[in-house]
Image (cartoon, rainbow, N blue to C red; front, side, top):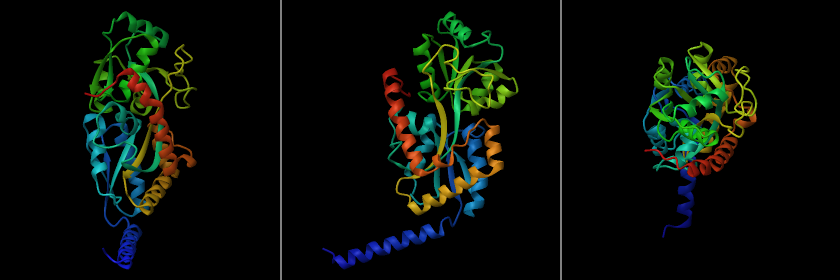
Length: 324
């Protein structure tokens, strides 16, 4: 057995090395994994955030798009990465909550990551091709029932957030429609604008510019009150469908075991970015709300993620939603 003094010395040496690494962090570029194709809302947020964070950190932030399997491939890459702060995961309600209940993952969405900060939150709403006949949500529900399951709704991946909210909507309203999976929001929106699909229940940020430019139209919000960015769009509760509440939040994580000093450095860079007027304006242009300062801490993100898991996993499992 090694002498106790040797063990203590080794532990102190390891602590010193870890502390020194944290003090010099970052000494080379940091990679931020976006688990979806370029051009979608998550990719856009990542690039806006990275542009400001590089100033605070003194190193470039390289965006790497690793798409596939509903975002799980990119998230798994980060879960397996070295816990040194040089590989980060930008994800959201789908990747770090929903997928944990709909897929057999090689990682744990809560335990295999260190929370850094929540960065944005956006409502979920029902949008449709611009020439869809119904004028409001009540007429839309009636129209869907007349279609006998032939209407189509785009989803990002199979078993993702759009599937979850879509299945929940069908249960509550007694409607049926077909889900059409896409690899990301960008190709889904292209088909929605072109009229190749009828509907989408997705985050406002993914389609807000298209609604603003009248390329598609919005029916209702899954919020308790009207959203400040589109006050002319009613809530589902206003149109007779109560209880359908959901928001699509984004956040930043590092691999489990990343030193707290590095997490603190990264959190500081995120907080500084979210306080910048230009960043705030660019987020707002994408339909993204920045969380209050108190909600930008690692502890707040961990608590919120756990609460969302406790809320949504029973709903998902009751509906029998599974990714293929």
